[in-house]
Length: 233
Ligand code: ATP
Image (cartoon, rainbow, N blue to C red; front, top):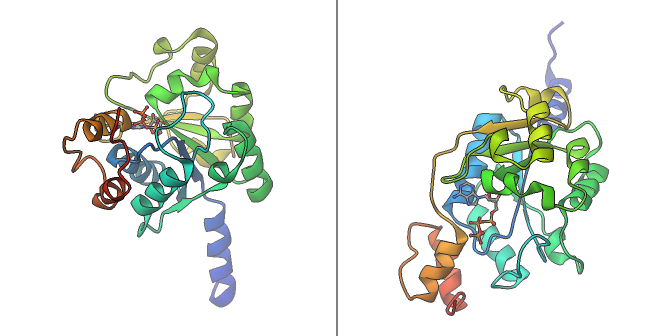
């Protein structure tokens, strides 16, 4: 019997709400087109339903960001505005403790349930440093990982330290369909348009009084200039 009317709408909504959800954490100091293309191409290539951007409050794996968490959050909000596939999660920014991904994933699991496929989006450089993350082995019970290629950073088990290389080899899947078969545990690589843009480069250009235009959205650059951010290196 064909499914019609209200029931069919309900079915579609519930099917949709179980689609893989991309999670994109970062310092975003500032957000730039490399980040935006990564998230956009992840939706497209991996058939994600949505990408939730999660700016880090006090990132645990690196030195303190150059500008405040509130300013980085404001720039991410400006960058993603108007894209219905993007949303912003401000919880790490609002927290008073350092940001760690596993506790964030535990919070999201409590919110979204155990069955929803979650896909943590990482650039290849971030994957290479995964072993330094707090409780990193627990990531795989909570989420899938999708790794984008990034200029200068190969995506291959041979480029990783031994324990991580072992996890990578055991969990890597060639087909993004693996992200729907289970709610967590697989690693998928995807080849995004290669953009050799980094937040470091943008901060350096700003500090030198040089143009960062076309490396990041105009609205974000306007925000940086209005608030005199990154003036000194
Ligand atoms: P910084 O230069 O300050 O280290 P960044 O440009 O690497 O910053 P982050 O906020 O640290 O930006 O990165 C967030 C995520 O985006 C990471 O997983 C990183 O690998 C990825 N990423 C950043 N820039 C690119 C890019 N140009 N191509 C692919 N992935 C990227």
